[in-house]
Length: 200
Image (cartoon, rainbow, N blue to C red):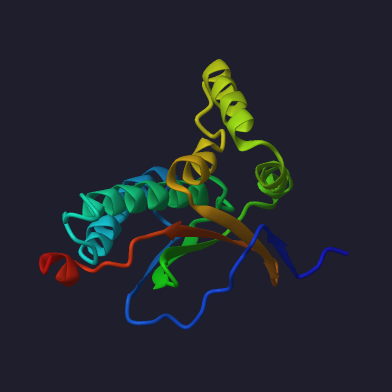
């Protein structure tokens, strides 16, 4: 019998958020995945703009910190929401996005119901991310994506780790008849807020 909760990677449970945090919930049984994709793009832009204000636009020590953080948040949120939509249970969706600052990093938690039909294969892919050489895996997935014209290749997860120095982990929970997954991403940041940057 499978345990009620399964962890993959160095998962950190969400703590009581401090002063800098944001929660967004998407819930609908009417909107389709394409419409969710449109909303996710807007949400990624909003979240990147919101979090960018906590960092200086530029200063002597951290040039263009705000732009870098905005680009990073936009990419990660877009990927996480996209995966939540792709691997959802197909009966509408209920997705929660939580971001907050904690110990020199911006932490992302995206929770959604996962389709049981794809859960096993997704967990196998996760195991590969946690155990294989990621550079080699990225090249292999890139070739596979081109050869099969399949954008659902997991390249987004690999890019988060390889290009954004992010840590990534997952939690699977059984809640009643539903399989729920939370994807955790920790993005290292420079804890220099805009007001501090303006004084330099």
